Length: 404
Image (cartoon, rainbow, N blue to C red; front, side, top):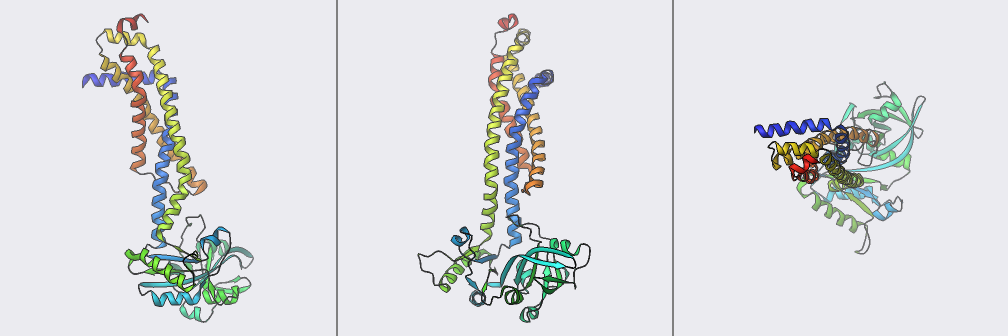
């Protein structure tokens, strides 16, 4: 134990003495570790964010949009889901405890006093906030009577409230939506952004009847509907049943693609994980290449160090140091440097993650895994790439080393 303590002490002294070698090795290791640690944190952040969004989306929920994948790819806005079909789904699927239709109009002009803004207008039923587990925190929700009576009332998101009302209480106030006076009856809680980066708090929700007849001049087609089921464990069976039901309603034969899209919680996870894929690939290649380069830098600098310290090694061998002692000392120096590089790399990745989060709202989450990966990799590089110089040093002939 005493011998190991002495070897460790000599390794630390050597690391401090050969400052330039230590600096270059440390920086090269740190950059590689930073890239790979950021990858681990990004992957964990993506999954954590995905499951948070799934929880917000509703693990018991399906979202059905008008228009198929082909229409979406071509930028077309097909209208294929009708308001009557929503009623049929409600009647047919007994396990669905909520089936809520929605229609949307983007870029709607809305004004209050001298303030004007463009926002997303959504038409829905009185179950909208319940369907999305999105509580009204100020005022109250609009009612089924408001929907039946085509009332000009609305709920607004937090962002829109700040843009139009600043510090005023919006409840009871009137805004103009495409020239129509609409009374704000409630404010939704803050929701943040969607997986695609859309601000979910930038919207106004009105009765679907009001939006369709007074703004869209529409009596039949809607944009989407949302269904929530009692038996969450059978959600994907319900998705297939719903797909079959809608295909039959739309008279689609086996060769024709769906003219609607069903979004499930799994689709959200896939979307966000795919979103991180390009960054993970880029950082992965960069990180691995950086670590390999760092390893070669470490090996070459240590080989030069062995050459410079030949006399020192010869004297130590001549005064009783064994091959194993020399090997352990050089390996110890390598591991100390790579460990410091791991610490620095971890700190760099923390800074990089803050920049990614600030610039691109990219989900980053650091857990023990990122910390563990950074140190396991740094130690691995230290041992693998430090072994050759350590062996060379330990195999030097003491007499020739003293002469050299």
